[in-house]
Length: 169
Image: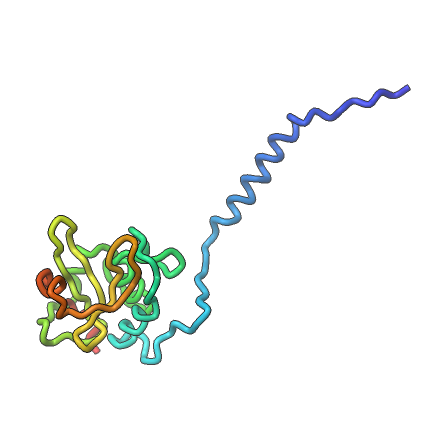
């Protein structure tokens, strides 16, 4: 007579662990953001207007510290970095470095696509992209979303430091 011996389940544990690890690692691949709407600017890529349009395409995205992608969200410098990169132009990733890239522009000569720089007490540098009509797009702070604001607002006027032109067109 043959006796039935139960298979020791503890021997399956390493196999189960390996399968779980493989499933988890499968999610670590490069994710491609595919928006439900067209985010391509209607102007020539690489122009200041295209950079401004690219940044504006992210209105409503959440602020995320260290964020620099539509899928995760943006911090201020991450939005600037992403909008320029999307148009084939390399700028530094950090606001402090963005404050010295390109050519210094006076506030009266701003054009769409220029980087606007502010120095906020106890917070440091903050950057955004000028979009015309005395306004800029930026990712302001935690629990906020990418939005457009006026440079004329007292707060932004008070802390404005410089503007930088990276695109010559």
